Image (cartoon, rainbow, N blue to C red):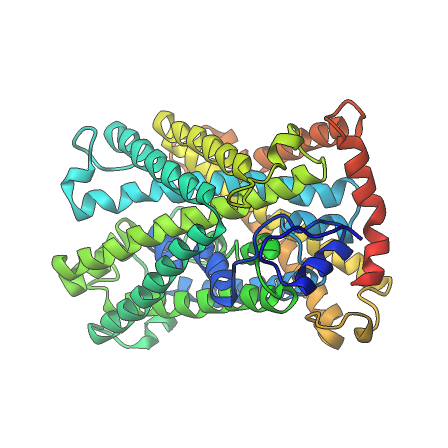
Length: 519
């Protein structure tokens, strides 16, 4: 058995990790609140619903509300399965560790690779959201030029500046250690939860119509897809772009006390809190909107409703809270991505593995992965300056990559389940289990994952004069990411792929079946 080192971990947690094949190197400082905050702040409904409300309403009108519970229930099935596998394998790296243990070889490794790329892009996408908020709070935040619109040259340049500044800040917090990260994240999540509750209550108090609005086929200016099924399927992209990342608590499993119990609960709390809060926020916005047909819900979205219903002063207070939510969202995504990179590097599954797998002796934190993720995300911001439409397409591709990584895990689980996994309950004391419902929920998660990915990847021509190939960009992006991943995987299988990379990766994959006996 590997000997744990002194990192503040309870002996049982360190010994449990050793049975899974790893030494306790990271500091275990996180409790249930911080684990929940990691998943909730990644989803960050206050950030994403503000950003993406326009997509849902533009395509689905008032009835787009119903796409939210449909997507929520589908993602809940996925979350239940991830909670179960996360309890069996409470190891840093979440999707990568889960994927390689239920589907060894390239498919299992690919789950981690796709999630890592998706997370890096998501860091950039979250950070750039500051441009849509801060200049509205105070004109002084528009540091470059005078036009704050993200589609303008001034707005794009300023977005890159604000986003890069935020990423530098989150990188510094990550380098300071998990305790500092958790402190900032916990405060931010409490502020976001409070803001969500207060905003929902305020909008309900200023409602100008009843909840029956979601049953009426009210629409603003019609989209190119019409108001039928095609429009609702397109509107479903809004909740699909919001409700992912709830697995982030699993990335911090080696820094969480009693992870077999806390991680599953944190994953499920994150998706349920986000699902319920988001539904109420959308309903309250539709009830309080001054007009449903003047087109502003399709262009200005939720910010228009807040300022119109609550006034500019109160509206700006809520916008400040949204800006804080953007900051902790960026921090949470970067933290999860850095732990994922660390976990893969520790197995020799990434280039430059020795450097990426090194843990700071002072903070007990993997510093290099945080720096690399931050640098890559800053590089992604430059794309927005050159072509905002291309940045949006890259962000869409990131959502597709993350959900595809989930599908690889749930599909691997289903294959293993059909062969008898996870075995008898008594062989896995303290492990969260779906019990007899496991097979049905696993099938539902796989079927939902396929349907969601097809809907996200489906080419939709908007007739706006853009190049036709742009409609296929997400599919091309996934194909490119998978091809690049195959190249990296093959290279890391060779003895020259990195110092000890071949032996480490091969040994980890060979031992997966043996570890199942212990878990």
